[in-house]
Image 1 (tube, one colour):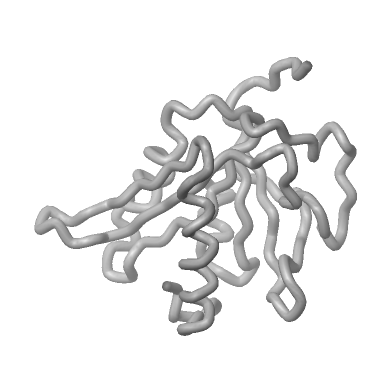
Image 2: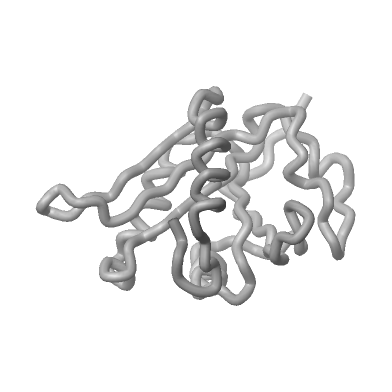
Length: 160
C-alpha cells in the first residue's frame, strides 16, 4: 500500500482496501492495469470502474454543491480511477502515465474522476494529465481531506 508520507498507511488501511476491492472487482466495467519491469516484477498498477447510478461519490463535497445534472450517474457516464500507484524506484520514468493511459484506453465514459491528497506529489501530476478540481471531500469520519478531480474524456453527449 502507501506506507510513505503523506499516506502512512498500515495494516488497517490494507485490510480496508482488500475488503473494498473484493466488491469492486466484480462490478461491470471494472478494469485493472499492471505495469511490470522487464524482469516481470510489479512496477505499478491502477484500477477503476464506472460510477453506478446509486453512487455516493459526489456526496459530501465540503466546499461546493454541484448541480444535480453534474452528479447524475448512470453506470456509464463517469469512470472513477480508484487507485494508481507506482513503486518509488520506478517513478519519473513514465510508468504512471502509461498505466493511467491504458486504464482509460477504450472506455466509453464521458469523464474520469479521482481523489487525491492535496499534499501528495501526485496532485500536481494529475493536473498535468488534464484533471481539474471539483471540490474537497472527507470520505469518512477522521479521514484526511482529499481533492476530488475531474477529467473530460470526450465531448459531452446528450443523456436521456
